[in-house]
Image 1 (spheres, rainbow over the protein chains, first blue to last red):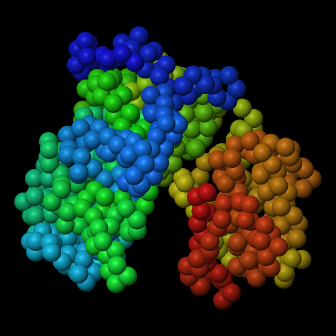
Image 2 (tube, each protein chain N blue to C red):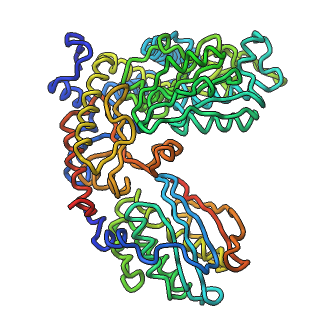
Image 3 (cartoon, rainbow over the protein chains, first blue to last red):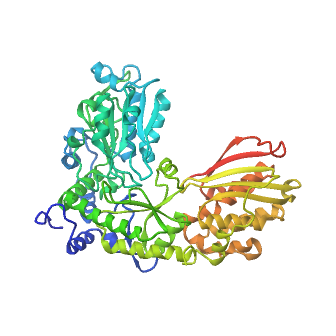
Length: 441
Length: 186
């Protein structure tokens, strides 16, 4: 679609712009459950893909397909250029250097990559040649602590639990308040001199809470701990600048930000990546291989073993370009408008309880709620019957649900292509729920 | 939508035979990890093997209307019947639920269970309807019934693994078995 730079920065999309955006996403014009228009409010799980991304992926396969970083033929050169070009696009999208961007199969792998660096660093010789002060930052053992939060997605929780188990370190966490914010009141006692790494989410995939990155980073830095930010729920919805965020590592997935499935990104400070031992090993990530031992390539190749997902990287690059053309400030403003409308609509329904902040302050467009007396699976089924796609369950954040004293929730989540009419469609469909189950007469 | 039959809503609002009772030969705990739903189910048998009669099925469950109603119907269908009949009901129920809408179910075989025929058109909900049936067959196994024939054909369903949590609560006989199982996310 055309550039929107002539419209005020930070304004929601106009009706005409929204229609144009929706036209870019072929799947949004299909119907479901018979002849019902699809109202897709599950972009927090995965987003749809604009034609530009689909075309970029197809174009790679049709014109440039080859194994990158291998071979001297023309296609290999073009494929390598396309892949490395995508890396540069990703880097520009988050304000980073290309050599700091590692492609992974998804955000989960990116987070595991960092977690495994700590335990792999303990292997004999793994940190040879690394400045001892830097190497010490990856040393983890009994008496050391790993800090996460109670609102983490399992992908930023289980890898750290496992790391603690492998190393003997202790896992600690920042709690969550009743209104769905991080409880930073005891931050100084949770993050201490014993803390080696603090891993937390930028935006909760359930509550929609935007976390105060600066406050956590400041404390982590003060004690010399590394910081890892899960940006899966922020990268598609707001401008990300790695310098401004001040963390050491950022992980996010491609498929939640209009990119293809099967690709994720790890960004890390170059001096840290350079010090880290590899996670997955094999082809591509080597410097010299002998039968006795192997030396490794510099980052990012060190962390990209095997033939990489070049077509997906190209597609993700196209997704970044697409989001950049929309304007991240406008995407944020648009989704904020939808979020406020949904929160206001839910507030008018006393039989609905929002799990998470009930106002739009420091909040993104993931809105989880419970309908009193009715299981989320049943809520989701009634919504689905009206063509409204939401997610139900614990959304891979089981401890958070336990904390909020609910078994499961129904979650609507927005992307740039959603509209106020879809918020209305959700609310209208929701009104059928207590009728069907006879809880409101 | 033909999913929420009146009879399902009725069973989900007023589940039959609910609550945990004694005595019991075996107790199992099953979880559906996709939604966090749980059922703790007890079985008490009169007699031995497949000719034994299901004297009682008692349970505590948190779940959606489909899983709550399915547990209610299960208890009502199998209590007072032989293990052989109960397993036959399970087979018929499972056949219907995995038929993708092609098997309307046999009322003689599964009673109110036929109301769940619509569930088979919603693959994501099939495990809701089967959670308690899986728990029930597991409890029969723990109570010493050979259910290998029916368990062997479980492979078509979300796999399940059984972890024996504790041997005995001390509440009834020494042969009490308490197990915990997770229905794998498929």
